[in-house]
Structures are given as C-alpha cells and as structure tokens.
Length: 172
Image (cartoon, rainbow, N blue to C red; front, side, top):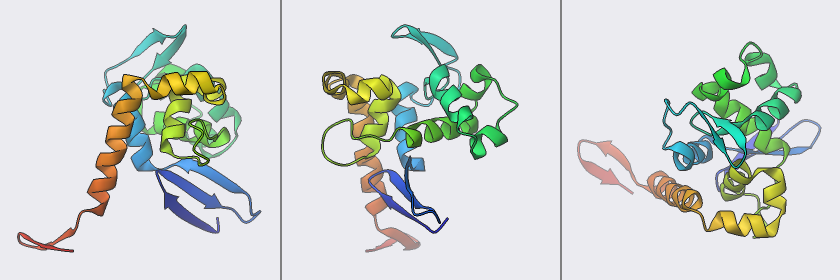
C-alpha cells in the first residue's frame, strides 16, 4: 500500500498498482451501523424487503458472499464463519460490509462524489438500488438516511472539537 487519505467518511487507498480503492472508514461504518439497528448486538436475523438481513449492519447474504468471493483479507480472516454468524459478529460484519461496499463504490445520490452517504444507500438499497435514481432518492427520504446523516454530522463536529490539553482547559 502506498498511502491512505480520509475524506468525508471514505478511505482512499492508493496501491502500488496505482489503482484507487474507495472504502468506508470506521466512522462511516459506525454511522451505518447506528442507522441500521442502533448497533444492537442482539438484533439477530429478519426479513426485510424480501431478503434475509442479519446483525447490527443488517448484512445481506449477497453482500457476505461478494465479500468472501473477493479473496481478500476478509475471506482469509473470517473463512470459518458462516453468513449468520459473521453478520452477528461486529468485526466480521464490518469487514464484510466494507469489502462489499468498496467493490461497488458508486455515487448513489448524484452529487458527483462517493461519500459515506452513498455507502449508506448502497448498504440499504443494494448496488442496483444505488444505481436506480428513483430508488436512491426514495432511500434519501427514509428515516434510516436521516439517522445516517445526523450521525455523520455528529462525527464531523466531534472530530473538529478542540482537544483537551490538561485539566479542564481547552486548546483550539
């Protein structure tokens, strides 16, 4: 790996082959988790829009399969976990989701950039829903999307807060 840059909830990895890979950063994943289930570790599995979703990210079996098929570190690190077990394990689910989203990074909201909001839409609506402007706009009016946006604003504000130097004095 050559370098990494974080911008708007997206991690850009520049590899030696000069290919760029867009991946959700940890703050983005936390906000997707928050918007999906309030990061509930006890959510289990349920049917949503005709498909089974499991765990705090509401991970689909399709996303899990695509992440495993990538052959990357996720496939090696979590090869012993089946779909339901992985989806309900925070570390496995976040890595599977990150791998899946990075494979299909797209500008779902039409703003000309790939940001965490796009990854959030893709997580909920899938790749086809992301590419369908009507579905993407519908998703952007959902309660899920409002929670995602609110979380991203909170994270941005938190990361821009002055650091506590010592005692109770703040330093800008």
